[in-house]
Image 1 (cartoon, rainbow, N blue to C red):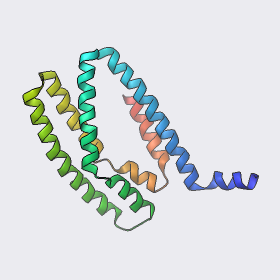
Image 2: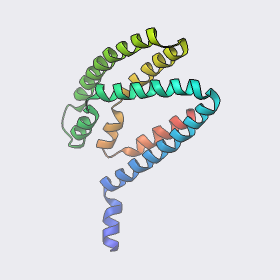
Image 3: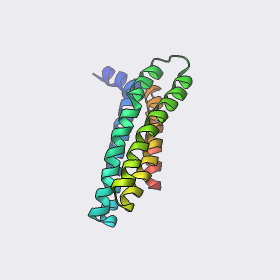
Image 4: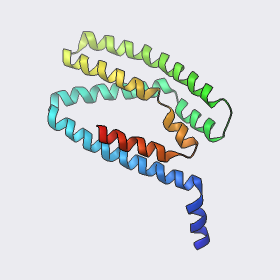
Length: 160
């Protein structure tokens, strides 16, 4: 039994999985904390516009990535060569798709929402662009270095 525990403790995949669990827990805690603070200070109307914008662009982000984050994770975890070239081309591809889709949404918002709604939708479009091209999380998970993702999340929460 102790031998099994020792093997599990020293297995880099198990340690990486634990770091990934810690990262998700910290992200969930930060999400709850930040959402409650934003909702408290903005009120229901403005918070609703922010939530609508976030919902729209999370869907656009998913469409633009087309699962490339999962493909990149598999590519990196198998130690295939030229993963930096794959990353570069993926970022270009995701950027093109995301920008085209975002232009349509922002144009729709310009004609059909209030000024604050348009402002939030435009701001969210820019913010989600950066999250859509960010594949470094998949890189560190594929290299079994999820502790760097945890560190980045902690720093991000302190800044927020």
